[in-house]
Image (cartoon, rainbow, N blue to C red; front, side, top):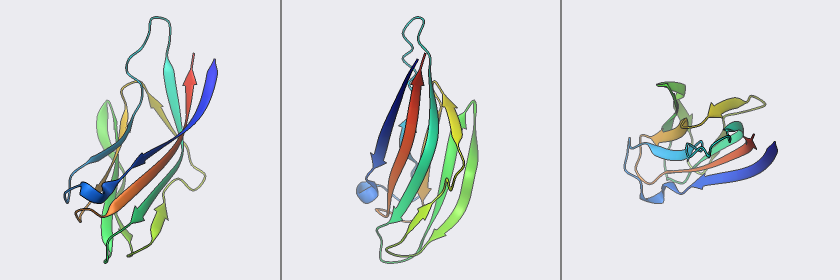
Length: 116
């Protein structure tokens, strides 16, 4: 069983308003006898726009649900979603961020992939 820490980023500087930014999809390319689970340990969203934005965080894991909705992030500020919590993702699950403003949200995701 291997544990690998990784950081995933999404540069939102060329994304339209209300368009999902797929930050991460858990490995769905299972090799025979290999399973991967992911523990999300950090999620930071930075507002790069000149005015406040509203962001949603969604998890697609069988069905798609909001982890957070309409989070206000002031101009030139960031928002840390996790704050000590963890999210477990299995093969094929994905996490996305949606901003109400075009070209406005950079996202950093810290994860640990567990391969068995």
